[in-house]
Length: 242
Image (cartoon, rainbow, N blue to C red; front, side, top):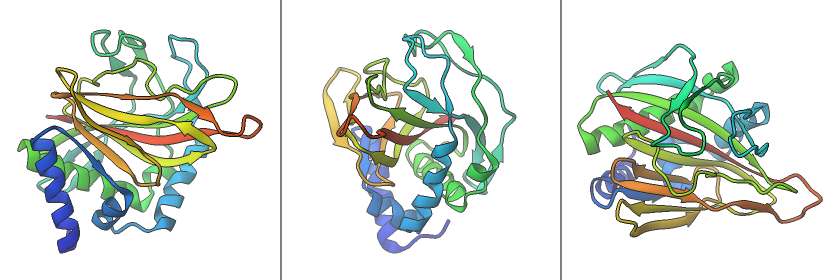
């Protein structure tokens, strides 16, 4: 995709950060420049989070997470993005001590989600950044739209604690926050040194990490007003080099 010189410098800085320390926060304003996205574009994408389904595979018994799932293959040299057949999602227990070791079947992404005009631009732009870091041109992309609710039950964006996802690069994109405190995201080196701590607050705020060299965590979310609905919506996107 062709982007402005300012957006190109932002993308280059992201490549440098990922090739160096391994973690990087990209504010919404900068990501929006890369994607040529408006507030209305983010709002249209966010509407899809009202159509997620309860995650019934939580080993902690939690009922605070709603989600869907889908995966793609991307060839960055040509920009070809291909939806892959729907199948269960699996992580091994060594990677996910809480929910790993089993096949988890989630509802697929909706046509509304897949046809959103911002969607392909986002996946392609991130793939180009990761290709510039890693040299890989073919990626498997796994998408996890999450809604974490907060109320009488504490919302846990990362119930497994500090972890990695067993992929090449991992990103967390804020879609919306409604009536919540908390949700502070942190990225660490493999030795436990803190690289980045940030609270994603604006639609389009993005935290990226080299999953081979970093660990990440997110603190729980609590309602500001316990009598009103409260949730944190994010899109977690995992890129694995082919």
